[in-house]
Amino acid sequence: MKNFFRRLLGIRTKRRALPITPVPPTGTTITRNGFKIKVTQTCSPELWDWLLLSGWRVVPVRHDRRAGTTLPDAAMHMLNAAGVEQREHVMGTLLSSANRSRKASPARAPARR
Image (cartoon, rainbow, N blue to C red):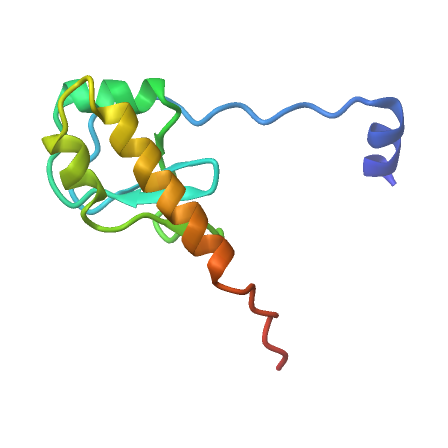
């Protein structure tokens, strides 16, 4: 009932963005708009600052069960190897290939038990 009145009166509040964190250790996952990258190698502070400005954040929970598209494991290596001028192009290529693979694979219906 409370949700109904909040929706009716427009009292909904937007969620805050995830907090800015220091450089993530190897093995953690970072996320942005339903895309996930597993940190497979150490990330330079300069690359991490660029990722933060692009909207990437560390997933705040240990076992994240949210649905999302995971980018290839080589994504972090490709971003580390790319120069500052080329990162935007590399990230665009990674995201567009992930979008194509997301659209190509049909959505599965949830299994009934």
